[in-house]
Image 1 (cartoon, rainbow, N blue to C red):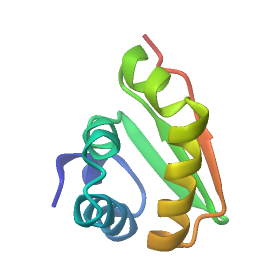
Image 2: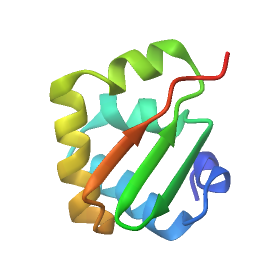
Image 3: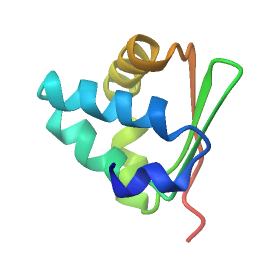
Image 4: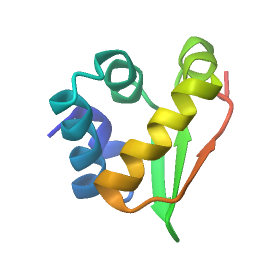
Amino acid sequence: MHPSSKRGNNPEAWNKLLELLDDKLQLGLLDHLKRVASYHIEDKALTIQPDASKDYDYLNKSAVSQQLAIFAGEACGCERIVLNKPSA
């Protein structure tokens, strides 16, 4: 189990997403998602709270967020990604 799995409401789906990214060699995206402060999956939406501004900036890029949406849809049925700004 990835350490970030403990920071959300659905560790099985989160691990499935992280494993899919690993299998598809999406290591940059995987690295940033492993460091999130928290995540929440509900009503086909994946909400991510990055821990740092650099992770937020990376995940907020249009191409990266589109990639993430595709992989999240495949791994856990999410149709929407919500990215919150880091608290610090």
